Image (cartoon, one colour):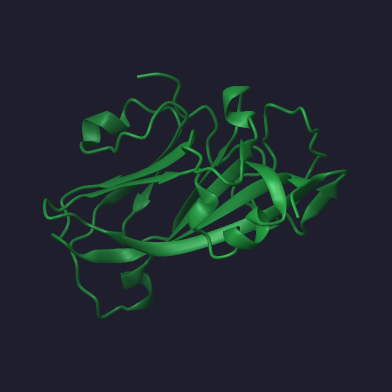
Amino acid sequence: MGRKGKKSSSAKGGNSEHWILKRELAPISATYSGPIVPKASARQESLYTIVLKQAGTVSSTAGGIISQVFGSYPLNTTSWSSFAACFDEYRVLGYRVRYFPRNRYDPGLTQSQSALYMVADHSGNSAITTLAQVAGYESTTIKGTGDPMSKSIWMDGADESVFTNTANANTPQIYIKMFADALAVSSVYGEYLQEFLVQFKGHGQ
């Protein structure tokens, strides 16, 4: 099934609320293990590093499971077009997915609850559809569907560190996957916030 979960949410940078950029980013670096959200954007020569965000809902399927896949694809963030117009190339150094359950903030909401699994995957975008599949991942964070949680993943290796033309849609190479079962069918369980640490280079305009 390929390389999975090489870095967990407890790795360097982790889920700390400080998320300080701990080292300079070399232009030829093929590995990134710093924070997803540094205190400020970092500029290095022709490189520009910024956090881009997007949000959405986390819902169960008609079969009563949550089976959601998040990829390293920042092109749907609200600020993407502005940066793409200014730079020639980009790469995603890493990203974080934060989950906010609705019943945590609405005590009157009654839904079936279950364990919620989040895994990091460097090998593919296939969704997790059974609990048995979760066992195949080294990097697994487990809480409940009623608990806030987050998961981070960083680029690692030559393939994942390649810069891509901002004019082209990049196929995600690193993924965070979410799974839960035994839930109410076709129900919204919460919202997510996906934070991308994106590095741009080359001034196109």
